Image 1 (cartoon, rainbow, N blue to C red):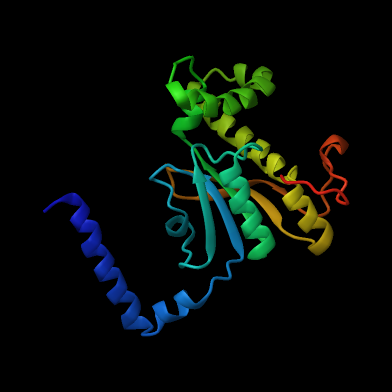
Image 2: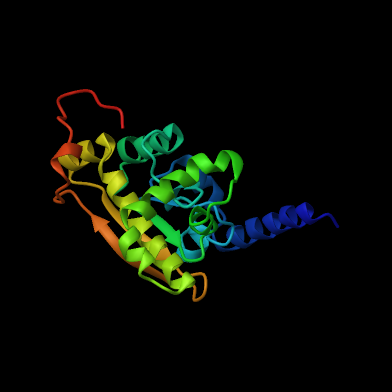
Length: 215
């Protein structure tokens, strides 16, 4: 049997499992979505958002990219964020990275990866900003783990610097931004950073919200 056909068969079994418990499960799912959480995660196939959190379909509004980055010129991410915050009215945005992240690991090298160099450049910037601390860590694995943590903190800050988030903070006192890290070696998630409506950013990143800003 072709490997992809196993996925289709697994889908059929999953549908039956849901219907056996709730006959109207898919009817209810199709009517609307009202997630409380937006999830910005890594594209890594080992970090499925719903599985590692035990969430049901409809509970997480998910965006994934390499190394769970929040880049202010990424119109895809900004569009998802705007829809989640302004239309779905999510109350929490979770940025979840993970240890042993390939994007982080490759950004720590001098290898040429072609087009992806442009993306990894943003991770290299995080390394540069924390070079003094990172270069003092002799163990390569420990240094990689620490860069994962520093990257999460940076992405949480990047998200708070968007006008999308700042407008919602001012008008509705939401969302809270959480920085999480998933440990592939244990399966556990830990929170390492958070920012909420009462958080203060550097003044240079605070918008005059009487103007029309787009990110």
